[in-house]
Image 1 (tube, rainbow, N blue to C red):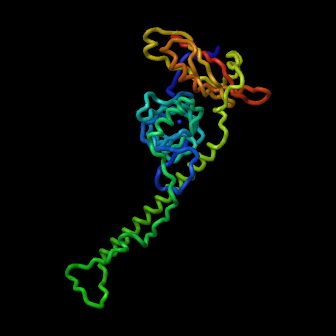
Image 2: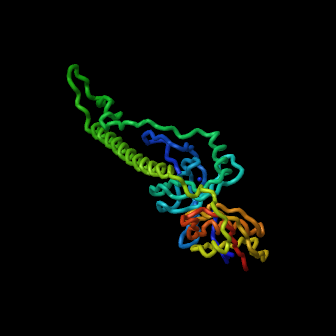
Image 3: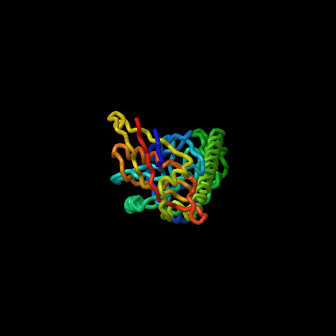
Length: 308
């Protein structure tokens, strides 16, 4: 039996803004949506929550602006509630793109129910369009360059003679041209950064994800206990603690070939303790279980003990 004494917790990528990018054929459609997103990440062995807001979302993942920075390849928990959905969606994801506080997450191991929830929501939304490449507007064609020079009211217009442009108007024209050129440079740079990040994200999504593999064997709990290399203890629920509620929560778990916990279902235990037990067990890590010498996805049971 695998035991835990205390805890931490709170536990789906693709997407990029719909403007400023050259056309890209997307394998999985994305849909623009701005909803609160809660990201959970391990910090010094304990889960920490980072709030954020989504930019767009699809079955493959989600793009969001966060209140803190993450690292490429970092594993996180993602939680959000789609508009008009009855319940929040919780899943695991990996950071595939990072640009300051903007992150692209690839979902890992979405269940069929979670995919159906996203499809139902997407059925009422319009996917982000594929944009044709746009040509930068030269600074010399700015609006100010097309306007005729303004003459002072006191200056007479002499037929057949070109009138001089006042110095103040020339300075304003130069300022406008400089502003347009600067905005073009910043816009092209930002578009290139996002385009490069999302190309990397979509190319990685084409690989066969080990977290989607079904279990190939059922392994006894005592065998998996010997392979446990990282355990996060559960946070005792306040209500259960006040009620002096103790006991063991048994969970049916699927362990991926890389040793991560990708699926959990309660088997037994007090209802008030189940959620905290699952939140902790999601962060456990095992050495890969091998079948015929190769790492394999397996099913087992995990036991989380709550003691005052």
